[in-house]
Picture (cartoon, rainbow, N blue to C red):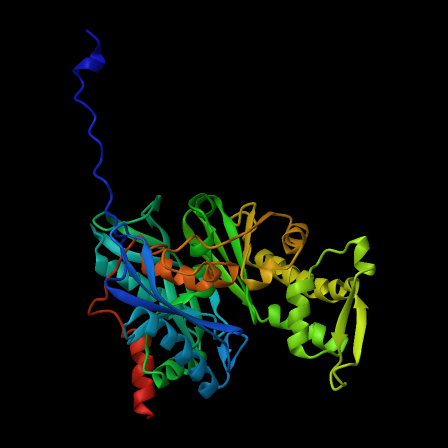
Length: 431
């Protein structure tokens, strides 16, 4: 008799729960505070575990420079307007929001923590203590940890353990990735939102959010770098084995390109932005010398129009974008991530839509490059689902449970008060 006939029938494993770990219950809001625009989306998680937008609002940003708030009143006004639009559309009122982290010069800090267990089973309290120790070690004067991601554990001599709870060992070694930012910038962000009657529910690294919105699962596992080319900053995040390994930020973005055009062509900033959007690019062509563009001059009468070849516009834009990719390459090399980042780069953000940026990035970074559009979101207008909206859509993915650590550690009595609670207390004490 065939031996296989004696085996019991295979039983399919139970279907995974549709709601991911860490998904937000009920209705919630996300807020992307950028240098060029402020975006608010109100959403809820549907039965299939995916978010649906209920309200959407956006305003031209004011009072923000290089990702940081420089004018509380101006920034508050823009945030209030964007949130108000979303609240009116969703017919709901927000008390708190999940906000992108782009202020305070955020930095990545890897940590390796050895923790004595003493031959007993590892508990959740041990893991909380390890994370707190990592935060303590990475703390500098004026810095605050925002993310603390466990990347893996070694149980005595056994590496590659994702969740050691319940395992017996003498020593537990944890590999952590922490992201921190300047406390002063975080307090200013909290103060600005409090003026608008909002509290910070969570902070999420902006390039991490962009990666959640644009990367496919294979890219996260095999290794990829997402570059979010925003208006005032360019940030990037390295993913591998499903984890966020590194983030960094440059204080250069699409605004600097516009400023270069305005300064070198002596044209108003508004027209420089129009030139960049309609005729900008980084790859030259023979016909560019023959295509002449009208350029009004600063301070001249309306009928005083200069004409320049499109080649001049390309010649101004290309060096700035090329320099940006060279700086990213240098930062990746300095971080020692040439292997982990894989062969894949995904460009997103508003400035990534300039003609030829993909080809230029591939040439400078020596990697395969694609343009990343955010994954579609139900209920959101098509105009708000382009690369320029990758960060807020990534915040929604985070709220749906995407990218959350495998270890869903709940706060305990041995954990220090949270960052945002301390910010609120600090502000109230000085009111």
